[in-house]
Length: 338
Image (spheres, rainbow, N blue to C red):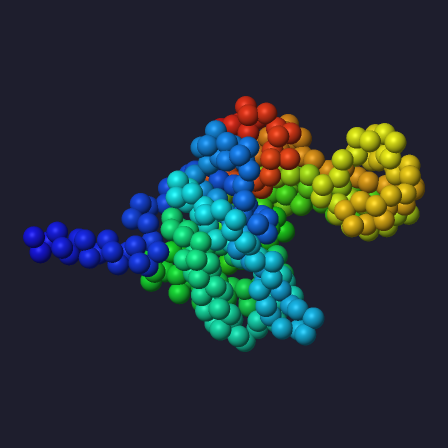
C-alpha cells in the first residue's frame, strides 16, 4: 500500500511541475503556429488530424528592444481557444538580435524572466503536454556568446523540471559552433537575398541550400523545418519597399503578369495599409511542392550519416497557404525521401 501511495505522490509531483509522464517521441509530424491569436479554423484542425500532426511549435511572444531601449516582450499570443491535449506543444520565444546584444552581462536575469513568462502562459491557457521550450534567434558572431549563455541559463532552469531546450538553427549558422541546447531545428527557408530585385525566390532556392550544407557541423540532434507559406515582395524602381503577406495578384485590372513570378501594378491603389503606385513591381514567392521535395532530399542526404531520427516540421499552420498543396503532397513532405 505504501508503494502505491508513493507512486501516486510521484505522479502528482510531475503533473504539478507541468511534465507529461509520456516521453516525447523522437520522430513526429510537426508544425509551427506563428500568429498573434491562437484560433485555428475548422480546416486547420482537419489538417492537423488528417496528417497526424503530433507536435505544434507555438510562438508565445517576441523579445525586442522598445523605443526607450528597454528589453521587453512583444506581440504576445492571445488564446481564443484552449489548445487540445491531443497534441504536444513547444512554447517558442523569438528574440531579436538587437535584444540579444542588449542582454550581454544580464543573460541569467532574462533567462528567469523568459521561463517565468512561458510558464505563466502555459498555466493560464491550460497547456499541459509540454516537454520542450524553444528559442528562436538569428544570432550572429557578435551576439553568439550572449545567446549561448542565455541557452545555458534557461537549460539549467528547465532540466530540473523535466523540460528540454531547443533552438532554431539558421542555414548560415550551420558551420558555426552549435548553441548548448538539447536539440535544434534547421530552418530550411528564407535562403535568398530578399531585397535583391534579381532574386528569383528568397523563401527557397536549392542552390542557396546546397551552398550552406557544405562543411556542416552536426553536434546536436536536428529536426528540419520546411516552408509552406507565400508572400509578395514589393519594389519601387528596383528598391525593396516591404513584404506583403496576403496579396491576391490574380486581378488583371490591377496587376499585369510579367512572367518569372513578377507582376506590374497597373493602377495605384491601397493594399494592406500601403499605397501602391502604378508601375510598382511585386515578386510573388511561393515554394513549389517539387522544389521543397528536392531541397528536402538534399538536406536529408547531408544529415543521413549521423544515424539520428529527424522530424519534419512545416512552417506554418495557415489554411490559405496549405490549401495550395494537395493532401498527398503534404504526406510526402512529412515522410522521409530515403
